[in-house]
Amino acid sequence: MNAQLENLLAKKKVLLADGAMGTRLQAAGLKPGEAPEILNLTRPEIPRSIAAEYIDAGSDLVHTNSFGGSPLKLAAHGLAGRCEEINRAAAAAAVNGVAGRGLVSGSIGPCGRLLKPYGDVDPAEVLDGFRIQAAALVAGGVDLLTIETMTDLAEAVLAVKAAREALGHRAVLASLTFDPTPRGWFTIMGNDVAAAAGELAAAGADAVGSNCGQGTEGMLSVALDFGQVTDLPLLIQANAGLPVLEAGEVHYPETPADMAAHLPDLVNAGVKIIGGCCGTSPDHIVALRGILDQLKAADKL
Amino acid sequence: MELLDRIAEQLDQGKADQVAALTAEAIALGLPAGTILNEGLIAGMDVVGEKFRTHQVFLPHVLLSARAMHAGMDLLKPLLIQQDVPSAGKAVLGTVRGDQHDIGKNLVGIMLEGAGFEVIDLGTDVAPEKFLAAVREHDARVIGMSALLTTTMPVMKEVVDLLTREGLAGRVKTVIGGAPVTEDYAREIGADAYAFDGISAVDRIRQLVGDA
Image (cartoon, rainbow over all chains, first blue to last red; front, side, top):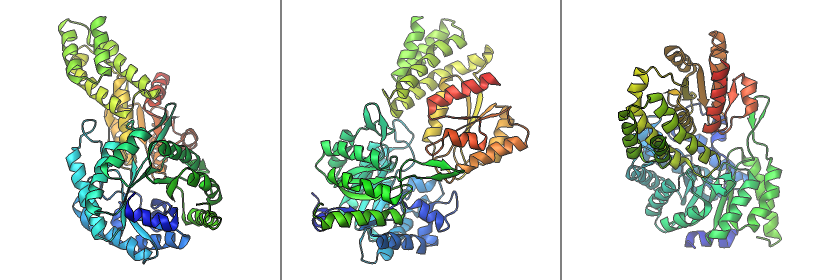
């Protein structure tokens, strides 16, 4: 196991990550259609206070506001040329908000385009973009990097490689989004859990797993499948259930207590890094922290 | 006939060069363009769609088959116009304003073209007025809207309301889809249909166009 991660897990047993970023940004004033990452430059106090909020809620690790910070993704907002300063600022904002009370992981999400031969973008261009992003996040002070919400394993592998180069000996976490099929869990591009675990590990990932797309119950099934095919620490960040509509408003049904109730199952499945994705809030993290502390006190971690 | 079966089969395999060569052969034999389209290309995409629906294949397979379909269509298009073969209908597609996600929307476009529809794809971040202008310009009877974000879903209602205000509701049918979108949401905002994926989008649009 990666030495940095091994030390952390020796102390903490299970690392609690943060919850959703996008909804917090909207609550703080992100406008529809605006690139979330631009706030790192225009209003750095927002990502800084979100990081602080999650640390206050009990997170051991928070993510930077850089999910869409690869040059190709930023290009959709005309910001490709500002990739480096945006990611550096994203790291700095989170580091300032955490203020030594936890870890900061740089978030790297999909580039938003399909890679050749299925799409129109050259894998070499995607790799170069992730290199720029990863290097800037590291220069900005992140402790580790999280490749997340990937649905194309080939793209995830490129991001892991770029992260590995930028980080040296520090840990790379890699997380895909899966959908249920009658034949098991698959990404949109048709990658199954075994292929994901194998290729991500070969590319240099230190922890593997899944985020987004499923509530906690679905994620438990994904985690159990990962446990069958890898010895790496597992990372799981579930949505607060699947969105439902109530009086015209989208609502994620899993309450903090619902998510917390599933936590022991995830821990028993060998998940070492647990956080939340869409629909989760600091309240969810508070509830997860409570259960984790109880498990730890009872020596069940 | 065997040649058309081979077009369908090579299309399913994603072999663009083969599909183009076989389509050229069928044209040279003097087969009607509509027959080559329906019994070759569309028949092939039907097989791909069914395999996708039942999770036997995934997005990459569909994308390669779509490319093969286009290779055949490029040869066939001038003949379809020349021989006055009507398309299955015209559909305007787009991801709504504020939303950049296009994989699902593109898949709907592929499946619609695969079913013989003319697709006017407005891309992503499409404002309601732009949907309206495209429908008027192309005299399309269907608007397909996609949203992946809970924050951009309400734009779908803006489009539906705009059509009503402009007196086009009923004449122009609206179909919506995307991860957070549901059948209930479609009903609530007054859209004509909800589609779970590219395959069901084709089914729903075929029904709506048939009703019109």
